[in-house]
Image 1 (cartoon, one colour):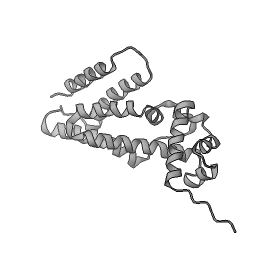
Image 2 (cartoon, rainbow, N blue to C red):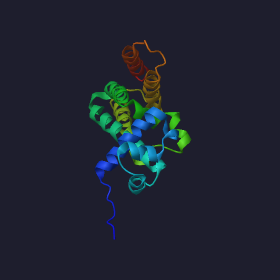
Image 3 (tube, rainbow, N blue to C red):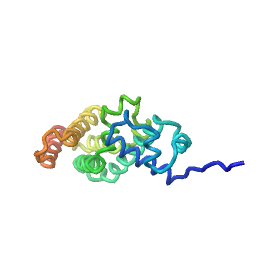
Image 4 (cartoon, rainbow, N blue to C red):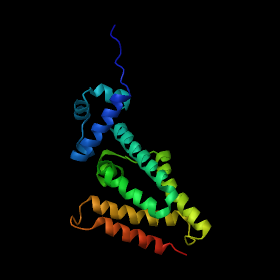
Length: 190
């Protein structure tokens, strides 16, 4: 009797990396498991064994992205809102394909590829904590924390998304972003 094939963490990591590359190049709807497996040097059996199918593979890629993003936000949290905002942009520019998969509408045709609840919550926690702390110390004006969080996130997310979409290729995006962070700080000052 043949021994079952064991698919280890290195195969799992290769499949995730390859999926990300293919999604960036072709979009999630056009990525096939056969193409992913071939590019990773394994079989579709490995994909099914490790993930279950395409939706689960994309879910794992998105969750990994949000976990990485959350880590970068936690590392920047002690610096306050401006530092969190800068870390947001730095992470997105360092992971453009992943950022597009995590937040882009191109992920929607495949199905509901959104972060798992705990992963998504962990990604937002540093901003939520910074807003709440700023309100407690009087550095930020009073408002429902969720309102402030989504208003601030909307500003940074919108600008980063425009930059990654190459809306204005010659623009000084670093300068624009710095001005936007200053505007956010003024808008939420007491």
